[in-house]
Image (tube, rainbow, N blue to C red; front, side, top):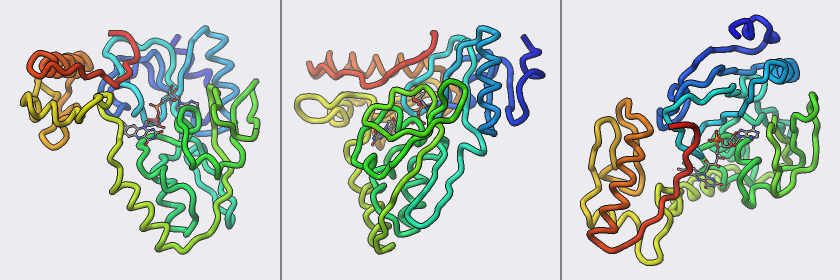
Length: 276
Ligand SMILES: Cc1cc2nc3c(=O)[nH]c(=O)nc-3n(C[C@H](O)[C@H](O)[C@H](O)COP(=O)(O)OP(=O)(O)OC[C@H]3O[C@@H](n4cnc5c(N)ncnc54)[C@H](O)[C@@H]3O)c2cc1C
């Protein structure tokens, strides 16, 4: 199996038995068989063919903000899009952006260039490829075409609401000009008004999860390397090397305590992935 590294095309960096916790924002996730960073577009076909030939399943990892990765072995290959897929090229209103570019970086680059329409992306912490694959929003109106990797080659197509594509490589945008200072201010406003950021809890019928968690004194509670932040009890963060199992334990304790002491049934908004 280790000969996989030798057989990969140039432009791919491979690590065997790589813990995903080194690459996810919550610092959790067990080892995947192979962690592959594909830096060159022309290396993609050869890489995917090789994985298929060896019977290795694969997935794409963007910034890893959408799910919490469990601690067990992840199996298969995790692919991250490298250098050529993190590029941003501009030609007046026509922009070409790689799928690995962070949404917020794209929004701020547009604002600084006096191009409007992408302000809402400033509050999305993940990559453009994942946003195009999964998310809705008015910002999509400015995406003219999307590049996918299909049947061994790059294919451009009109972007649609739901792309349902396993591998998005980038996009072409058409961005109208506006006064730079106005776009910068509008982008900053998006962050200031970001009251509905996804939290670890669904919004309850009445009140807020934050208020309920404060009432039952969960704000600031710590379990080994993970904690419920004092300033934002509706989140859970990893402050040490806490495993996913501790994140889960703290989260379910909070849900239980609110139910027991307040009679309020909060629901979890977190999606878990991988084996325990
Ligand atoms: C604090 C916070 C705020 C958020 N705010 C918003 C928001 O305002 N609006 C919103 O819509 N979402 C929001 N999200 C959800 C999430 O950040 C977005 O869905 C984001 O686009 C995920 O990007 P990622 O790179 O982290 O994806 P990942 O978690 O790495 O991947 C998510 C999924 O997309 C797939 N994927 C990744 N890259 C590609 C690709 N190139 N081609 C095909 N599939 C791919 C992965 O395989 C995986 O299945 C928020 C999340 C958090 C934590």
